[in-house]
Image (cartoon, rainbow, N blue to C red; front, side, top):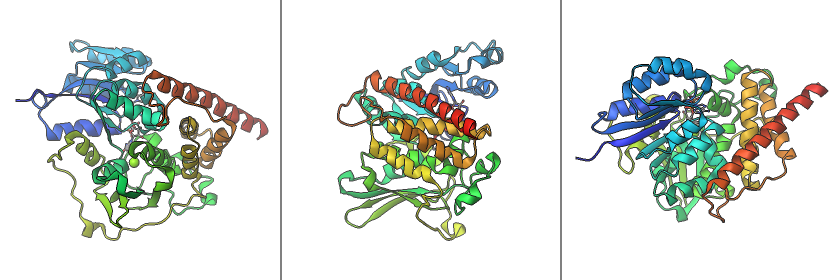
Length: 403
Ligand code: NAD
Ligand code: MG
């Protein structure tokens, strides 16, 4: 009999983390099929403790030091190893494992994902921001250590499933639901509230990615993600609005065939593909009833109303550290929008200003050429991230001065 697979989940208390644990419950027997090596959570001490007591990982880490007393109290008497703080998160991510889910949100996920990349494990990558900021270097780091990156993002997972002859591809087509504001004009979007932006029509996700879906920044990040994952230039990637989220993406080949992957909009489907890879696994997956769904519709994205998609493409084309600039500025602006400090349309305005103000920052090997998989790429990405956070802070301050 095979030894149980050692599984780590970074971001176990989030939307993807919880779905991953649910799927493990449905598809395997703990102790026999898998053991949990590490669980990492941000600040939800109660949920992380509940998960740790249920799955009994070798190590459980809560990132937020402010939550440490509460977490420690909840874990008292459990006999389990626990820790807190960012260094402990990275140490936990670096523990040997066979399969690691990288599902921390935002740039906070970069260092732990980078650490996980050197374990030789299969890296199920949900944290798209780390791929956007470290591109080829991250993928090559995983491969240099004998691991494999599997895309969790539903669009990239779809492409991964149908991409059999990369050299014969004419186009990757990323589908986009269009978010809650599809069909609206810029005028309509002036006064939209946080609550309206948080209501995604098809997917239930964490707050940051839900806002990114409303601005189309999410599709922008996915555009960059696709370019790095599948080694395609921007000119070979298109975005197609498909409000029903049934077709998760497509690959168009030079012989005129297009292959698509279809499924219900449930992240457990792509996660299960990553869990089973290279085989598919049987589970009580949500069935897709196309007759019940009715018409599937398609349209071009409205780049005027949703400039974030255009800005992401420009960042990818500029290369070097510009995707990191886009990502950092977006993260700060999304946070400011969620805190009601800026309006919805200002997210793209500030991101564009930041991209214009930032000198094109160099980074050792976001680019293919130098194949630098050591820490320099990651450290530089974090430096750019901090510089841009400072810059956007200044832009906010001067906007208030002139208001
Ligand atoms: P979420 O906000 O629900 O969860 C994020 C997780 O990260 C939580 O466990 C949180 O505690 C943890 N976290 C936050 N800050 C942390 C820190 N500083 N250190 C350690 N852990 C920290 O987000 P989500 O929707 O699950 O998304 C996670 C990632 O997956 C994102 O990068 C997102 O873009 C990507 N993704 C999500 C979906 C989805 O359907 N939710 C789909 C595709 C891709
Ligand atoms: Mg996606």
